[in-house]
Image 1 (cartoon, rainbow, N blue to C red):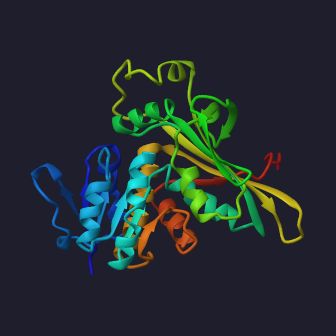
Image 2 (cartoon, helix red, strand yellow):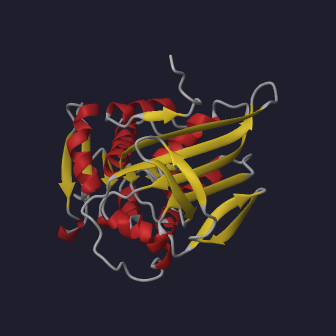
Length: 314
């Protein structure tokens, strides 16, 4: 039976979801929804993807109350926290709500789970992101440098001023190295809920001097219709079965709109097929089939990479 997908948002990410969903399910029917025309009827869709500029929490609450699975591409921490409050309702109605299924949070969290599962025990996760999709994403990137970064240090959540803590992060090619700074990202907070044994969790995003100096001001120039090639970098540290200390680094370099749309499509198909547990989920939930979702993301053109050392001349 063809999947009936309702889609809110027709920007860079939403437009790509509409075009690419058929690559995962050739019979999928995508219906564009305009919330300005009235309330969305949840009974008409197997799953609804929210890819419009936030906030998403109120619309997600209406859809969940109507028994419809929801996949949100939200990246704003406050918006995601509001959706997290819907967990009891979603569980009672046996409905999944994925809070954060874009590039970050979303792909970063899937990679964190995939890499951490290769270890006997993981105790550190460090994320870095680069690039933006459309104008709404660029504004969110701008705001993230003006707030407070939430990190997990020695098991305690701490607030640090965004724009501080410069670190040179090497992203997969062709992006390469960028200076990255603490930012108000949702992934570290979400990951802290599903990795109880992790003692250190940090998140940074790339920025230049102008980004940092103007972060607490309105954007001085209109954002581009779409940013260039973006990237994510996920580094996990822990021990192997022999107790030896190990570090694994993975990531991806792709247009941010493409990687966000691929992640949302993968979760949407899983939700429509009943492959996700009920309640509010983050992309790194251990009950999710991480490998199947990453495989779907790769089918949509996002090449995942893992750092294995210096290539040999052979």
